[in-house]
Image (cartoon, rainbow, N blue to C red; front, side, top):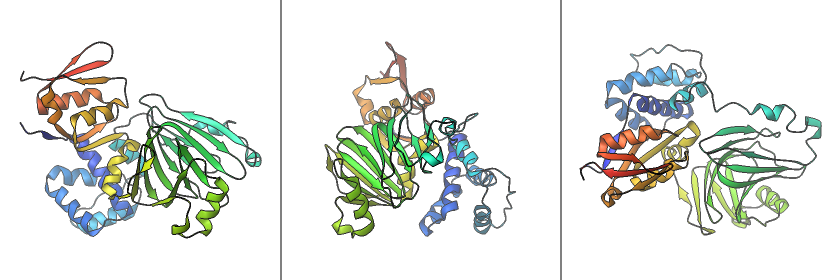
Length: 351
């Protein structure tokens, strides 16, 4: 039995096509262009779906690039936003996650002339929920499942605490006020950038920087010192560890491991939850089940030790437990049996 399987359906191909369109929007490297041609050659369906997704994109540069790569094709431009295409890729219907929390504009925050005063609140998501919140400085926070973040803004600083879970921070630039996210004993500070923090527990977390740079320091570090250091000091003199765009920092037991340079594809896989997806590329089944369980109350118990050797690759919609179980049954002959409460037992059909 092959212990790695690809779970790709028409929806999966649409999601892959949307990822290619988004890469084309920011510009393909020479290697990515070769990878795109290889992906196209795998199936005529890939070719047609790519043009279908591109036709919904609202930037003519993507259509122009496609026409250059495949001159015989003339995709018709339609007026739809990039967010609509990403929502299609994530199979999100009826409600878009990329809308602003209206409560923030209805008096939840002080009015503009009061923003110099202290502002604090708490944002949270339930199990399986993901939501975007807008802050009064123009920054945005996207919270993943079962996450809590506390906001504390003053005239001199923008301080946030990731109490639990995972969040993407799209920081509006303000050199006079650092934007600091504290998680456990660590702090992550930026003046204007985009980064993702996942808090596994008080001692273990991950930081991925997708734009700009973020300084990792101890949580007790003075915010004014951090802000001044980021503006005036050279990298070697900074009171912490600087992580730049395209890098990932893993902190285990409050000890920072060596910085990892990650590819754009790897970043997109790690942060696929932001489009409502989970992407695996050969991870052990047990690890896959742990990640899937973050988005629902379902718990999995593997009854057959041999199933531990199975590695899984594929695209899955967040919260689609039934789809995952169907894929496991079809690819690995795994039988799922509902046990007590929300527990599901997994066993091989061959025993």
